[in-house]
Image 1: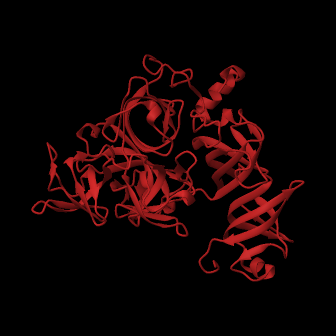
Image 2: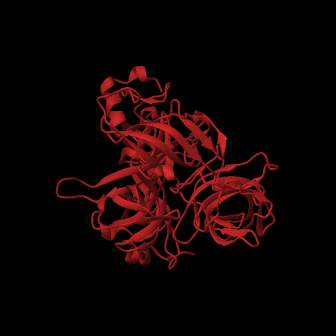
Image 3: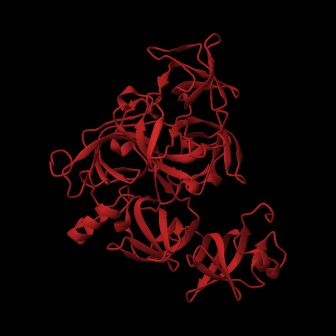
Length: 492
């Protein structure tokens, strides 16, 4: 990015509000206008945070821009550089967070692949893969290696996966890369269960691990301990080789006890008002727990959350605050019509999206800008924007919040970039129109509707249905070519 073209006011606004990669001095990796190492004017607190990398320019996790200068970086047990990190990786950062809650200084970053091994089966219809006995779920929010798509994956491909567990014990993939060196040992990480010290076996999320030929070193195994194992897989048993390692992720380390913890992930195993788990870590709820962007009733299995709290004597995370993050429900592909760095908003297909600290950015165009953020966008860019809608209140209008912005090469979505794709719920039905995720789309007898025979039959049931619409636009009017109903009752 050329910062000469950005005013100091814009830079300060980017630092305060922009997610992804905004508001940082990209040449140094330090947040703009902040001297993290020496400033006495900003009070900092020691914190451990774990979550997905959403951007660079510093390393951005859970909406916090971490200055990595001098930090110890370790990925899969190997000393690494900041340039080795990728958007979508799950990392654990130890450091300080400034009083602004948006900037910090990392002393240590640890990361590991949850899985590295060959694909044994693929079911693109359900969006699932199986590798090393683990079921992997690909979603619209999965990040991919450069020029890779889900459709290009093949049985036998060796993949490297960052992921988290959902409530069904399925690994939800946040990033997937192809591994070129197929002779390298495979890797599996997760919590131990069914430990058998006599036969020297245990399970990781249903995959049997034989550690009889491994060295424990100073590691004491126990059920619930998170470990990383390296070795071979014969299709049913993972045979560990060399040393077993304590996982880089999780919060079972003694040095976490006095730190504030920040953890993001998907809620599983919820006991209302009492507890839930995030990727195998137990989170306790009490009457002092505060909720942001929602109330306790909104906390359900499968929702994305960020939890702040401290560990108790049993190494459980006692929640002081729970941020209820909305699942992405808007999927909008098209050309960027405008960008406003003052309000941190963009317009695509007539929809205005707000960019906040949790918006992730990914440049899949030929430019491949690593430190990619809102200030790098140019009118006419081909974008895929995902997000969610915030309902109107008495004091504020309805808003669209961008959770992810990807830039693609021109014509990436077909031969004509005037094609429109939008996903979401049908919010309104008019005369010959439906409104999906805020986008008004005309429908007619030529519109192909999967699972429903006639247009009238569709309009009779459409309100509230989740749909995916493919349309064409002309003179600002969108007309649906195809509508797919995301409901098993009507899906072909």
